[in-house]
Image 1 (cartoon, one colour):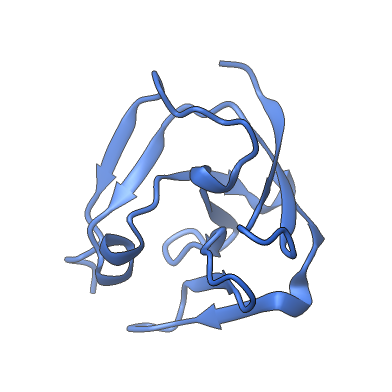
Image 2 (cartoon, helix red, strand yellow):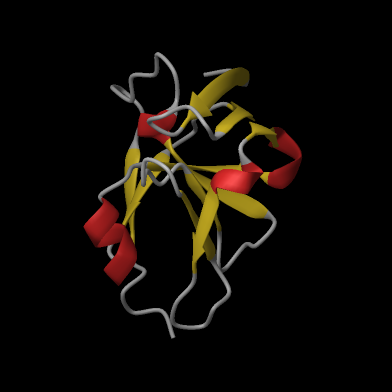
Length: 117
């Protein structure tokens, strides 16, 4: 798949963003927060992520090493993306927040976050 621009948002639309990606793969994670939010994520470099609006609606959550930054909408509660722990210059984007996106046919890789120290 070639790189394309995709737009996304939280449920209420207060947070809106766009990304550019080729969807080489999407990932799951078994860490304590990812298990609970059950998102499928695509990894996008910060240079291919643009926040269109909504920074004032960010609610941020950090845990364990306080390296990753998990963002939620303070109005609707949806998790649209996070700054990654191991690669902080990348975002993990919740693909279910992308407009008109179907993950069918894209390889899914399970990452092991529960054992990270």
